[in-house]
Length: 268
Length: 278
Image 1 (cartoon, rainbow over the protein chains, first blue to last red):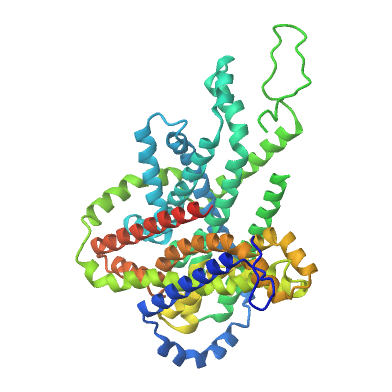
Image 2 (cartoon, rainbow over the protein chains, first blue to last red):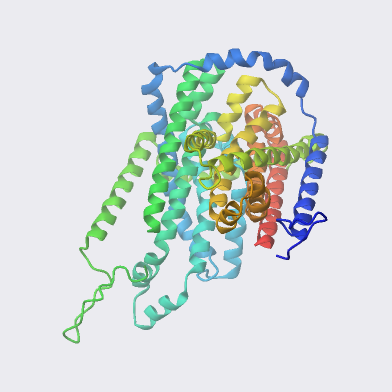
């Protein structure tokens, strides 16, 4: 950092080039923001016109309906069960796909490229859109929900697993092969111990996403606590909505805290 | 980690003795199998509880694909011209939501950081608030806000901003804690004011992490802005949803293809920019 003396004899805290960069970034950022604002037409008038109702509506939410607690927990279990089922199916399928997709284990470059392309297309479809398409074909119900969650798990896991496999050093595997280990022994003793920690980390991250997605799909009508919530909203039962939101929040927070503990343990 | 199961102390006393590749009955192994067993039981219970046969799901793709091939193709290109304004709007919604949440999250991030905010009570309060924002899925924020404010695109903007704030504030705070090291201490010791520390100490150092996280959240926002339409919060999702409900599958598939294209391009551009910065 070159020291930079101002006109009044003070030494500036930041160098001139640093100041210029910050300035340019700020100008560019504000410019893009203004352009974006002019590109959309916000229905600001209607919005402001309705603002007077807000305090009243919010006051209606300041209550909890405890009578639905049992039912809500039951529906929550359904949501979590859908997420877990999809996690397993997606995980197992991805385990195979990732071997075929990773550069260092793929049987051919074409197969690897095809799988990677397919998987990134799946990932690009938001899974709410995915379930709309699947529900159009399979009808409402848990099968549609688990299928769509499985697909998005495959999208996530195949990419994640393949990148872990690609990081592996092939020297260990080659030396095991040289000492006469069987293919199965190489896989179980040479390969899995190395990739297991990363795979478990991917799975635990995905678990949180999967449960959140499963609750979200419910809002569209796929079953579980999300469906219960959207029903409560549609029928204007404020106290029930508050109760369900609280249950969802506590569940997601608990999962986040548990995963943080697991991550810390894994790092030490 | 490579040879965790390998016992270094086993010395072959005879030539033909086999050294096991992994020790059979170590406590770690038993614990691992117990965990695996527990998880397996949980997953089996999940399938039973849902009364879903895993085979149904594995055999679903052929049915699905034939249905989609029959009904979704060829996409109806006529819808593009009509929906172009909404498509453009969706993109700029994501831009604005990213901006607003980046600015608010910067403040919240400072308040959440142990090194920059010494008031433990404030810190904890903000932390819980942000955790609340983060742990409610975005579509639930959407449907809740539509319920409170009525249908409209500004509601979608608020929902996007709230969900992004939850994610960004925590990421910012973590990055701030990582960088707020010697330079800030030195400035503090030499008598710089809090504002001076922020402007000259924190912001220049924080800029790369800030850009990185913000770009990443933009990518998430593009996706989410499509989702939010499903609950009446404006944008492309609303179009897709209504075409689906009308069973105009060919129009819906056109819109979905545009959406997927938009997401892929964003993903690629953001990935490119992030790689360039590091």
